[in-house]
Length: 124
Image (cartoon, rainbow, N blue to C red; front, side, top):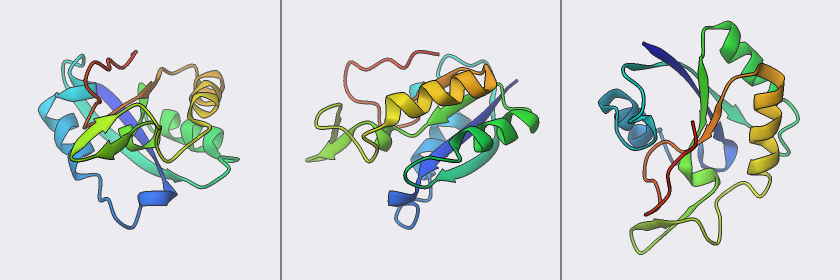
């Protein structure tokens, strides 16, 4: 069983209940397909400019997280019902933030949950 933490964005916390992310996790699909038995350990909401993201990641690790996932909407966008890497998602600093999470925790920080853009494979 792999314990997963998710850090989402404040920009869509009132419009997205993470249904797609959590469904994919429980069904081992999309960005969670490489795990034998993924389990959600916790969810945090990052607030711009991301000053507390390392602390959130450390708390998730302390609660047992073995990997941290960043929802797809932070780095890709939806147009006409399809998801694309360009022009990007809610977070312009996503690469910096994922690096900071990894350095602070030593855990893999994976860009992607559900709705992966065509041809995109998350690095675990």
